[in-house]
Length: 390
Image (cartoon, rainbow, N blue to C red; front, side, top):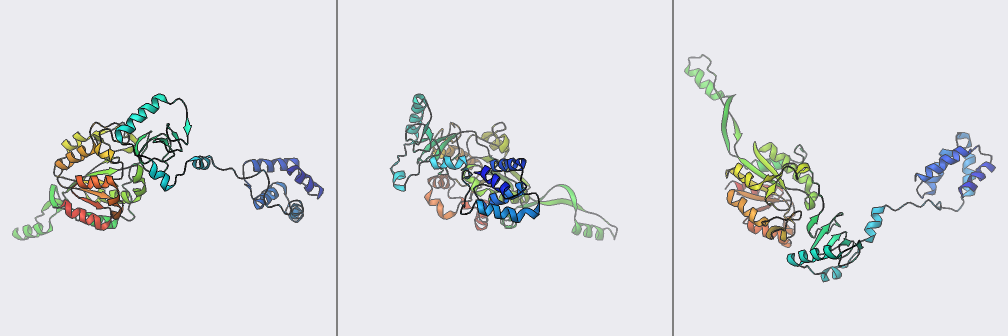
């Protein structure tokens, strides 16, 4: 078709060359015209016509040859591979989802061990084997009310109770300033000022009194600078469902680093277990045992958790329930230990407070904390600071 178009232009006495025609074909192979006739017109005129005086002649020849054609055959836009993969996922109706059985922890682990021993090949769209796009509790890209995601990206259901893959998290930015002013004001309720350290600040009142007593001879008095002596131990949940709240958490984290001179922070994922970390890029190489953290920072620290507490209940109450590795003790045990060590504690949740009653994991953590969970809002921060001051 395009060769005939080239010959048609030659017949219309347009000075087009074979080299210019090959340039047009190369541009079409790169997808510069997609499937649009308008785009093809502009592209072909750019490649084939080198003299503006021939534009009118080219328009007439183009209109004659492509009269009535709205799309150029053979140049349909390619569908991205990830779109095709999404189309392969099985879409279940609410009724079909309700029929799927939540197996429970012991039965789920037993079936996974059996499937791994028996399975010999790849499966897609099924309801039994480790595969993709189906309703099996093992694999990725499908749906099951309680499953184990093995490789691949999440389908967005957030129902996996364990994930077998290498997951990467990002550190929170502590330099964010936009939107932090109101958060700083709320955090200032958690203050206890004292003058400690070297005498580096001029004591104006003391200098005046000393000078007066010294018959007018200047007597400079210095004093330590006044600081907020409150100590804060901050535990930040990262990754997974917390990705939806990155901006809000960064603003809170930035404000906290500004307001509290004595601030120590660590990261965790979903629930605290036997270790935490400070750098998400090195979280597998540089871990801090939670026992060491509790021994290093005394009970005078105020303990603050920041997380949506949204996870499988197994992650809190079941040994081995951690979504990423087999923990020996449940998350609830470690939460209890932290609360015994730090009696002044609060949990800040970025999820809307009206949704808490509909999530079992949030109910469990609220119970463990003695209802000391507060929304990550200005009003919620103020309530949390009052609780920590008690």
